[in-house]
Length: 165
Image 1 (cartoon, rainbow, N blue to C red):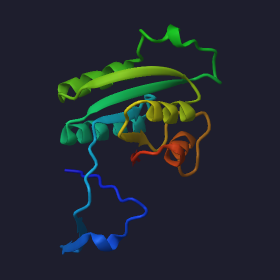
Image 2 (image 1 turned 30 degrees about the vertical axis):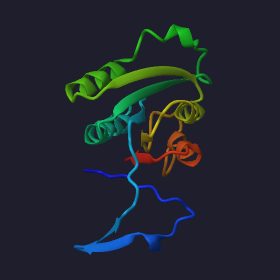
Image 3 (image 1 turned 135 degrees about the vertical axis):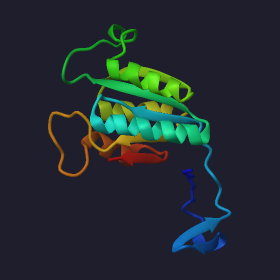
Image 4 (image 1 turned 90 degrees about the horizontal axis):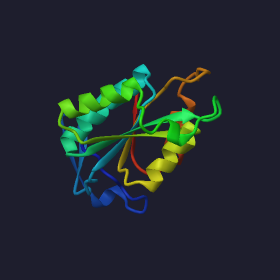
């Protein structure tokens, strides 16, 4: 089971009891973060499929729901939001089937805009407790170490993020 813990910057490690078990340091009395809604940006890439599997695992462990979003990049083509609301891509349909098979509540959204900004904005305006995102997606230009979307989300989002490679 994966547990996420938060530590306020003003708090120090000294107030938590430290226990060593088999060369692992475990802190006791750290408040556990409740995860209810997990945001998973999907683009059909291999890494986004891996991030979906990770999100399903975490959702099952924490009895959480998954919100999958797919962002159509408005700089590549001229999209209108209403044109795509009723026609989800095949990978969103597959994601929903996989979540339903694992008895995970699932909803999806298709957004139009800049993927980086749209993911962060959605996470800030909805009740998102955790973002699970692939390290690289389907971008025109390959980044050397980390995809530009995931890098931006890691810098700008104010909730925990799981980066899947």
